[in-house]
Length: 254
Length: 321
Image (cartoon, rainbow over the protein chains, first blue to last red):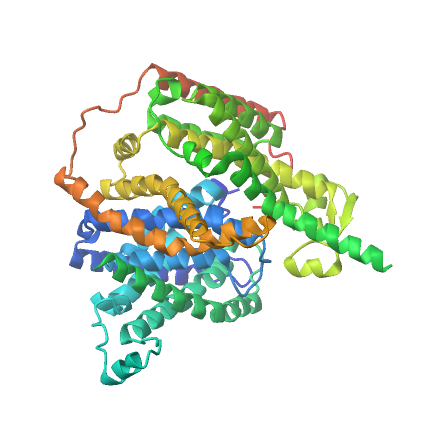
């Protein structure tokens, strides 16, 4: 028995070498630290940003414990689609779209964890889960935010001007759907984050955290299958999440 | 033969929907969204929970969680009963007690049903130290696609029930914190522990937002019904329309809440929130007589737990996870 339910097994068959995990988490922390130094870190969040994070966390909790928990009963456990994943991804995409500052992914993940995981799964295995979720899901979102810059999800893209062709269509009384570049950008970035989010659960959890905490043989065939099988639904949910985010951010009027 | 097949499928699906829908039915019919909001919201009163320091309540919650997870199931059950009976001391206690009872029922049925059909036989055999499992109901073979075991067993039900005793007491205790401390009290006590103000602030916003989400979704559903959602449908389909309404209300509710965020931010900023790294308080958080009593109760319970575990009443059943 190890500390707090952590067995600390480093040599399970097939387990990812701990050096690689440490290197990845170290690089992640370094990235956040340097970026935080550059932009001001936690101090940089305005009061409004903190409120957005809080509201997002509240939605994640409501989803996880009530709506998602209920819907999940009708959907068998399968490697292709996850109800919990859907709710978390969309809630965090919305928060990221509203705040658009590097670090929001990790801070939001920390608060989501405090409110939901800790109550439902207990304190056993901590602080491994906090580190794992912040430095995988949170960090990946922050990297996308850093790479996308202030025009995340096309929020700053100008709305498309109505062309002559549209006007003539309007005159004829046709309903038409406008497709603006912003929507494409939102969908693409949503998909990117969605796909990034597919990786940690099978790879880090299955390949390292789970054997580290509880021991057991790592099945790499299953890990690869889980990742590939999940991607189609991640693409769809990511795109929808990106579009919902754009719509909400526009409705809020930023 | 065909009749048997029909009965088998009908009963199996009925059982399936019972597990999924009954807890929600309790929530909607017996508790109601207003009742639910009542147990997730602070109301002013002056009994011992209300005088207790929020940090002590958090410690109590963590202790209940730890004790429930390291001891045999009936200790969790006893704690559930004790905590539930303290609901009577809350403001409007009788109503909260009844709501708490229904919530516990929801937890128990929900958790039992979440484990009973799914837990692999190997785990049950290990947990009950026996290869003999009593079959109650054999599912149609295609149920295994949903992760079901071939049959529902008595041991599966008992196992699920015992696991639910790990959650029941904890969820009742965490509601006590929400019902008896104002968000600002929680904020202050968390700050005292050393968590940065920005994080506690977000946390408190989240805590306050959770009941409001239910309130607004409720409003949104009612408005949709007024506009005629499902008005021509037979009444037994109404719950489904309610769910559909709740689902389509999510995005508008997010927009509405997020729009209100600006007002909250302005009101916090005009009161010089985060202007200084240190804050002073009009009502500092102190450790009073009630807190000392509660803390000594914590110490006593921890000691009792150690004794109980040493007597061999640790985990009576090898929980998985």
